Image (cartoon, rainbow, N blue to C red; front, side, top):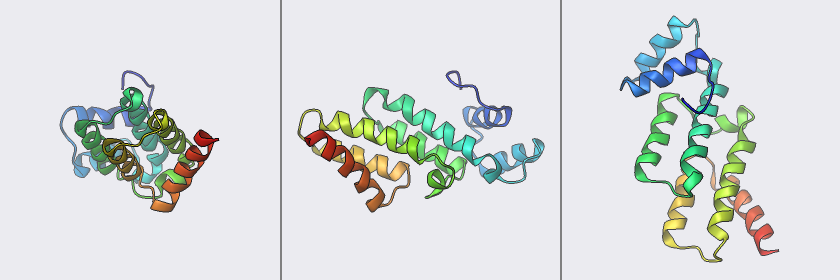
Amino acid sequence: MSRKEYPEVIQAALQLIVDGQRSSLALDKLLAEKGIQRITDIKAKTLDVLLDYADIILEDNSLTQEELRNLKMLKLFFRIEEGDFQKNNKFSRVEAIIVRQLEKLYDDNRLEYQEELHQSDLQSVFGLGYDEYMQIVSKVANEHLA
């Protein structure tokens, strides 16, 4: 919250998380208080939160189990589903994050087991199907090998 300016409703939702109120009932109550009928009405902003968090935690090129749990919790809390990034025109940000990570993984021309797990976690967090993810991997691999 301290790195980005979010709309009031998003700040309030994030404060719920900080306060340990991570239930869908708490979020629904907040949305109702703010006059928002459905989570889909603020879906683009909730996706931004997840993407901003991913950018921050991946600055060190690693994804700890706690960070992965936090990403999954944000997805559940904000009811982010497979295809939401695509539907809300956020796929280019997802792709940029994954490309940065893959480029760093390919820098040493070796792909170790931990790095494979890291890729799998990224695919899962962003709800990408195998084909979608492999398109990004192929693009980066082709550029890296060229």
